[in-house]
Image (tube, rainbow, N blue to C red; front, side, top):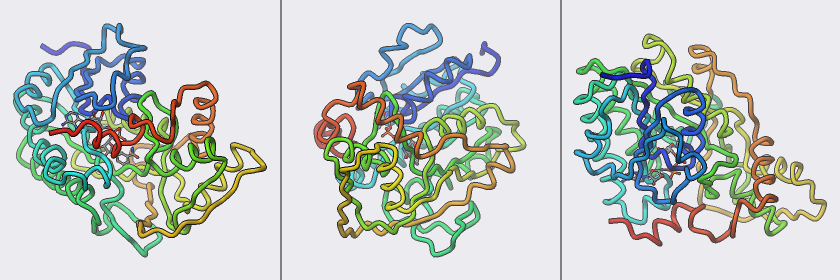
Length: 335
Ligand SMILES: NC(=O)c1ccc[n+]([C@@H]2O[C@H](COP(=O)([O-])OP(=O)(O)OC[C@H]3O[C@@H](n4cnc5c(N)ncnc54)[C@H](O)[C@@H]3O)[C@@H](O)[C@H]2O)c1
């Protein structure tokens, strides 16, 4: 029998960038939390490892049996696990498809066998691809540009289909790019990477500059998952939600960073790029349906990175594979 009043959560990929902020917050809120992760980026929960409500599971998404075993007595699965950026995906497309797409069926099977009540799926706002329209909403057409986004969208379809045949609540989140400091930090995301370059090199390299990028602060990202965990079924079941806050051009983001760091010697360097991804997401639906109002800005995210850097919490920020998914994938040669 399940205990803790429906508050038993398994988080695949729970030791990643988002998970490393989400897991401690859910523990604080009284959830029992099981991160299920390969721990590619190391032990990120040493500071909370003795919490009796935390059960860490080192497992592979592709190991269906282990996932089924791990999802016993679980009420909600938040599915974050993923090879989560385009360059990492391109390194070994077959491997990545096996994790990002094929293993998604293991999540559904583990949920079905264990009578899990709810599945929350982390998709991405990059499923929309390049858009001319100002406001990209959940109903806008999806034209994913990369395999990473394409398989995110495929999993969405699989989940919606699965939901028609099984009595399991399910919801899809399409987050903007996350920014800010977490114990498992990613410095391959636009705000974070520009900030670390500005801190270390006193130079902000702007690739392109006019592309619009939607952003969300990690603290708001965590708040969104909390909302999705506790929202009533009728508000979230079968629904797709964008989750973003400030849609800024890369150049505007650079200016914010310059302002927060406040170094008069900061140099801007413009570099041409073939990364033309530019999109602007509208997040009115999540505000209207779930009452989600973002509280934290890009400035706050940059500020958290600057603080962490000054405290020595970011070590060798330009080269350390632990901060760069592609570098880590090259280093570990996952099979
Ligand atoms: N961070 C963002 O800006 C952002 C934006 C939109 C969507 N998302 C989505 O949110 C989710 C979390 O993103 P993140 O930034 O925390 O990513 P991340 O790369 O930091 O974390 C992914 C985690 O999955 C784990 N993992 C990878 N392969 C695995 C496997 N085979 N078995 C078990 N665990 C495995 C890794 O060890 C890692 O801890 C992802 O699905 C991502 O696509 C993230």
